[in-house]
Image (cartoon, rainbow, N blue to C red; front, side):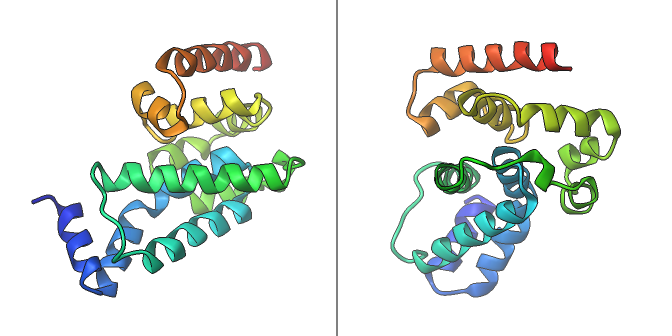
Length: 174
């Protein structure tokens, strides 16, 4: 039995320490994805916390058939997409570089710590939402194209073309 399965079993039994362990294990990756989709560190933190509140409320009512990380990523992406729909005027200027440096402590966050990576992140926010989302999930979420296709309920060919067009546009903007 995997560590995630053990944690989920404990969570189903009402063990709040299991919820804390799940949060600690995945918070950095999930926050990185939320920030890359929302382009707002504070909104990303709110998104992550909302996802975990809902996750805790439904702990005994659901069963995850695939990976826990994949499930949480899809929850964060869906929540972030809903936030974007509510607020179409999200701006990259809301992100302060110091917030990114202190909040994102995983390997991707460490890359953002240099000027060039920060500039790439800012340019990424200028991509159309469909391309932005696919590029962010692939690069920051480390998801495979098939996983992204399943998550977004689109074909793998669409995911690959959005990624290709997004990367091409990034190259022209940089």
